[in-house]
Amino acid sequence: MLSWETSTTRGAGGVPGGEVDNDIIISYSDTIMSHCQISNRVQVRRRARGWSQVELAQRAGISRAAVSAIEITRLTPSVTAALGLARALGCSVEDLFGVGSATSEPEWAWPAPHEPAPCWRAVVQNRTLLYPVEHTLTGTVAHDGVVQGKTVSTRPAVAPENTLVVATCDPAAGLLARAYQQASGLRMIVLPRSSRQALELVAQGLVHVAGVHLAATSDRLGNAQAVRACVGPGFCVVRVASWQEGLALAPGLGVKTVGGALRSRLTWVGRETGSGARQCLDELRGGRRPPRMIARDHRGVAEAVRSGWADVGVCLQLACAEAGLRFLSIREEAYDLCFAAATEADPRIQALLGALRSPQYREQLAALPGYSAANIGDVTRVN
Image (tube, rainbow, N blue to C red; front, side, top):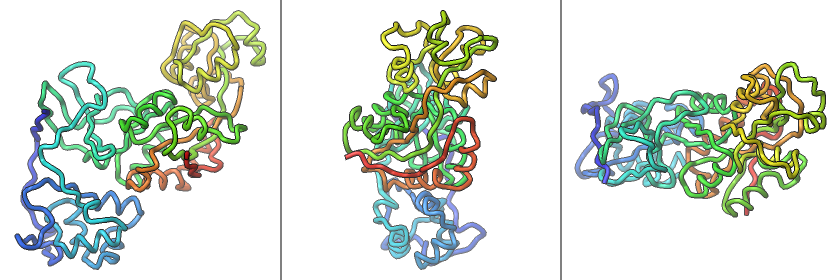
């Protein structure tokens, strides 16, 4: 069993500013929590709907001060207040204030490579999972705790139910993570994984969302067919973008066309099996042996070419442009995010859909080299 040692304590307190509200007075006869740990998702669900505290208070029939105090868990809501909040937010009281055991055991999503191991925490399908800290596509993300043996020492951090874990290879994922945080106040952790690796993780319930680009935009069934083939039915795919995938060419090469690159004696850098770029490369090179040099992601391909370790490789136009390389387009691909259909009502998924459809994010994405934001936010169910 992993035991938890918290590095902070929560002092007893009243309503901020010294206010007291009858909606949140604690009594032994009128509370929804006693000697159990409470999971408060009022703020998550409010932000997912884009409501202010004032608007939620009006809909729930309580004061704004009550909403504020409940969200920061300073005081426990009365039954009347809890029912009003649940009714306003379209969920059950259990969904909003689900009571869990204080001794529930967190588990590793996958083994940590060493100890002591900094980790993140996230609730995925009612399980609290620990994620070994690694490089993310959004840079360095502060860890939530450190595991040593069977003990996890926590630090002030984002609550695990307020964290969305996304596995993808999209080099522009940082834009979405920022839009998501700004709109909802929630945290997105973006782990670099190939399309098939990401799909396997979402199918196993180890991450919330998988990024997928395994189909050209000309394919009518698109990534939905690839998702069905890889992990089966019961998922949704939401369109993020169409993007250009092609060849990154070393400076000074006289190659003018994709066919010219294939006919020339060049050193290629490849990608791992299961990635969209590897699928594109295999189709392009036919039965030729895969390159010996393998990059981890699109930026890795561009860096290998820029540094002179390879002459050419398949990657996205964005990664090529960032590295200052010449680009030859091969095809336009559909890039989607995939999540389990059963989690669609999760406030974190709803907040994700809201961020994708926001005009600001759409404008920023469309300005990137090789990206098109047409049909962004469209959801397809994989049955």
